[in-house]
Structure formats: structure tokens, C-alpha cells
Amino acid sequence: MNKNYIVTNLEEAHLELEQVLKDLKQDGTFGEQEFNAAMSSVYHYLNTAWNARHATESEVNELSSEHFYLWREFPSLDEFFLEEFETRNFIQR
Image 1 (cartoon, one colour):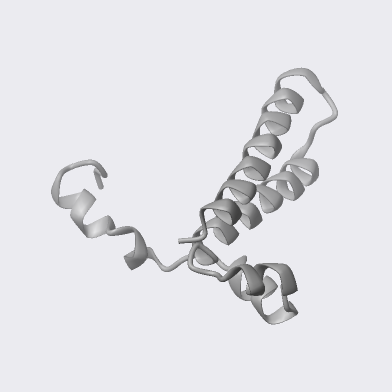
Image 2: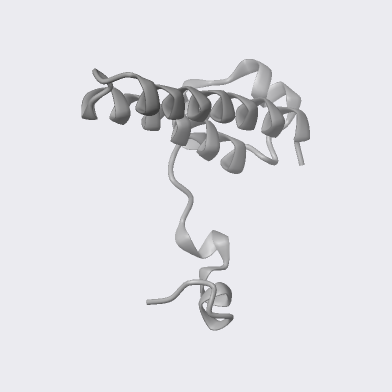
């Protein structure tokens, strides 16, 4: 697992979320367009942290356009073991 790259992306997502929270609480002009752009950035970093967790240092350093777009995709639901959570009543329908 490429912990350095995971940490880098999670830190970026964290910073973006902090800014979104600040803007939502303080800025009366922070509307849906700004929220959409900010959340797109958050998901980009979260998805990259997850999807590139096994990337080599070489893949990270080269960052091909193929990897850039592949890594930022939403993970499939089965990757998160959601059925297991449902059976434990963590997720209520």
C-alpha cells in the first residue's frame, strides 16, 4: 500500500473540507456552484487515495493521464463491503 500517496490525497481532501465548512458557515455568497466545485475536489482526492492505494512510486511520479482519470473515479459499492454493514444494521434502509 502506498501510504505516502494516500496521506497526501487525504490531507488535500481534509483541507478542502475545512474550507468548505468555513465558507458554508461564514460566506453568504457560497452557493451551489461553489459547493459543487469544492465537493468535486474533495471526491477527487478521496477517490484517488482509495483507487491509487496500490500505485507504485513510479506510477505516482509519472502520473499518466490514464491513471489520473482512472484513480479519480468513484469506487464500486462492493469495494466497501456495504452488504456486511447492512447485516450489522450500520446502514438502515
